[in-house]
Image (cartoon, rainbow over all chains, first blue to last red; front, side, top):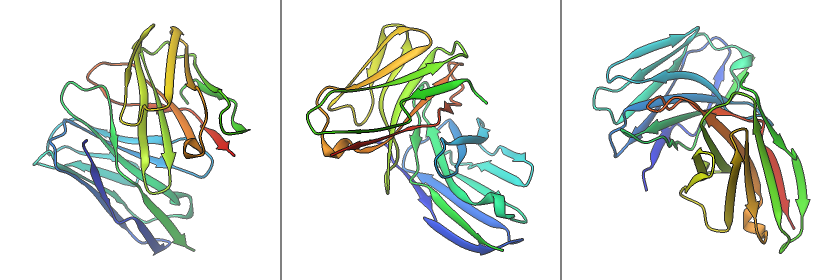
Length: 111
Length: 113
């Protein structure tokens, strides 16, 4: 089946630093989504991307839909303690109503 | 927040017993999904529904069945629970065909002893 490779698997950063993570696929996707999950809760949608090359921001978060349609990137600027959590990418192929998820990036922030 | 509830939130059961998890939505969304989440595997799709009585398998459907008799309810059943089905189960909903945004419930933690 389709797989998404998400990296890095974990990050340990200082408060105030910028964060970058990415997701790659062997398949072409027409949708990329980014979610955040905190302990004991379900994933929460952060950003949705529907067009190759699209760059979308949500506050300090910026995500991009790769030109090749096989990758996506998420950046967090000036990290704060509440950014701690696991970030998941998810993709869907043309016409599919199903998502494929990456394995997640666990973000830890040292104050 | 999307109006999605899952019940129970926690359950401990024994191998071989049947278990049913319930997902309830108040959004009248067409699509509903069941995922399981395990360390190192992210979220994996078990089954999904694209309407009342319309369901299909996901990538890890063996040992699970689903039913959807009403728009608002999607049930996941483990006919005979096994220890490998110990996991956190999430329900998700989606409305617009072609727009793949899914909204998740709070999850059910299931332990099979």
